Amino acid sequence: MEYSTVTAAPTDMQTASFHPAPRTPSLALPRGACDAHVHVFGPGDRFPYDLTYGPPPVDAPKERLFALHRQLGIQRCVVVQSLVHGSDHRAVEDIIAASGGRYLGVAILPLDVPDAELQRLADVGFRGVRFRFLDDEVHEADVQAMLDFAQRLRPLHMHLQVHFRARHVHLLTPALIRSPVPVVVDHVGRVDASLGAEHRDFRGLHALLRNSHCHVKVSGIDRITRGGQYASGVPLAALLARDYPNQCVWGTDWPHPHLDHVPDDGVLVDLLAQIAPTPAALQRLLVDNPMQLYRFET
Image (cartoon, rainbow, N blue to C red; front, side):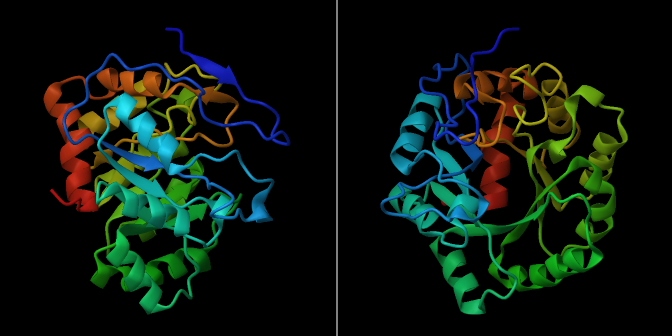
């Protein structure tokens, strides 16, 4: 199967990471469909970029995301804070407010964030806090700090979102199964799809999901494969959606930073026909599960 992609430019050039003209998908999505993982970048003149992690990206503001979702047939969304804005959540707060409750947020916060700020973010529409374990090693102290922080999330009905390297699932699972709040794993656990469904990292993700408070995003098919060849990633996402039908949500991961190609979001939507191949499965993945997990207003 051929996919419409654009070759990514070198990272030192200011080039958009999102497709300039994604196709309109052929798959009709159910009413209330949710894109459970996106970011917004800027605009930089309103929401300055944090240059700690590199040069500023091309703006990917709320207006472009709203237009994309209209084209794709998506009505609800979860916007994850990006490191390009550091701990300044105003860009995410802005899109939540502009959406009239159809878009919600996930924060990135320091461990010593005041309780008052946590409460404020919960009140304006943030449903979780993201933790990243992308270094070569996972330190026990960092894992325990995350669990301690989760105790502060419990009265706010917020969850943990965790983004980790695939091999870290084995070290993190004993802690995540003890989490006092729901857990959401990003991007199919960042497994290497070319290694297949029997690889120990994918089996480790399965073991984690046997705990009903743990969830996974069957997003990032473009991240667990290479060069826009998604065929090896789709069956893994389909297995998770089949085996854990009430614990999966899906997202585009727009605007797709840090990839070797620029995905066509219309293609990513059409892949849902293979990931959730029946109307009931698609309804669960895109509507029912995110409604329950993120507590959208009806």
